[in-house]
Length: 188
Image (cartoon, rainbow, N blue to C red; front, side, top):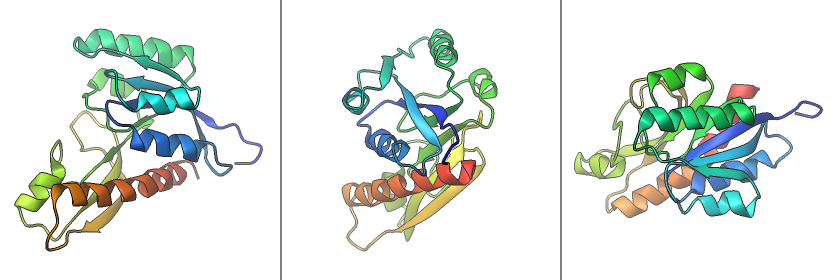
């Protein structure tokens, strides 16, 4: 990336922000093609502390009224000239209209080996169904939940005495590596 300008990126969150923190650290490396310029949260999330620590502009946008929320998001994204969006534990579903405005420029990390276990409680469902593995997937965001084109995936083995908590910890560790690799794959 020497000599090239990094792509101005927004990260959308709703929770603890471990993937946000991972992406911020990654964006500060020489090899990163992105720079995190904005964090949008759907609520007063714990993850906002990372944006504040790194002095990254952040905004809480209430998504109770989706159309208004998305309009507010687009205004701030345009004002800051954002070209790429990473969803990182963002627990709201973006409308098809919003997705079209950033077609091919919004990616998401999902805690399962898609197409299995779209949506929530992925580790619970994997364990209930006695799966041999779970995993994580980085994919482009499409109108249909967790159905966009897959960029990268990583399998995580489920051991005999696995708990939801232990599986979640193994998956999040892989998510951090996978998200960085997926961003590099997109821009290189």
